[in-house]
Image (cartoon, rainbow, N blue to C red):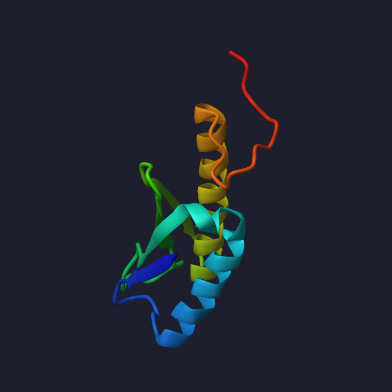
Length: 116
């Protein structure tokens, strides 16, 4: 699983920060690791240089092996909260994808299905 970061110039995107969030994403998506080929993380400050409360947007795209990518976004007051929220949302996207297509992403079935 390759994790690629793209940060705008208003967000601290040094190597230490990227390594920290790479580890957070890796840990948060451990269950689905075998199905993810690439993760792209786009982090930007929506307020830019304006004064006031910072609004950080994290756009996370997970490319699944042999499937369409799942893209989510989360907007919050800090980089950590925005990335954590995006990880939660992409995990929910994996669960919804599994239930919708009744195809387990990691090779094991949870036993949950929608019966419509």
